[in-house]
Image (cartoon, rainbow, N blue to C red; front, side, top):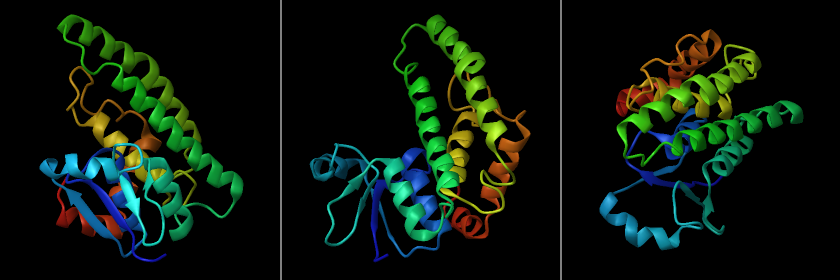
Amino acid sequence: MSKPKLSYFDAPSSRGEECRLALVAAGADFEDHRVKREDWPSLKPQTPFGHMPMLTLEGKPALSEGNAILTYVGRQCGLLPSDAWEAARQESMLSACEDLRAQVGRTFGIKDPEELIQRRTEFVEGPLSVWARGVEAQIKGPFFSGESLGIADIKLFVIVKWLNSGALDHIPANTLAAYAKLSKLSEAVAGYPALQAWFSKYPR
């Protein structure tokens, strides 16, 4: 794979961070284009759908959408299993994570404090619990597909860190800590040598 350029904000979160970590874990030579907020309005019209992350490669049209970028990196860099069914399981997990993000997103912008408490509590007790149980049942261990790190692991790592951070009001810190396989998966990703070196360079 010739040297790609990944464009995303200078933030260790969300879809752009997932793509960034996949490239780092794979040992890919890439340009880590960290977009300043003040530069975003001029870059936005150049993106396929008006948002990032965006992957560009010489001679190719720009690629947008985090899951598409992750899948491309996975196929090119050995972060997707060679077995077609196991690869499809990983891609299914990418979609399930986006479905969960959409559920959280429905609670953003709620102005009434009591309504926000209610909606976030319902999210934790309902969709989040269902999702976590489903993920837990599918992890082979230590990583999603077994012994090898894959793109599903990186996506799960980022979303679990977000949900466990306490940064979202009324979603308790370490809300997913009770799910042993999911917790061990996150620890295994954090301890992956290439990522450990990256995290020491860019503290989270």
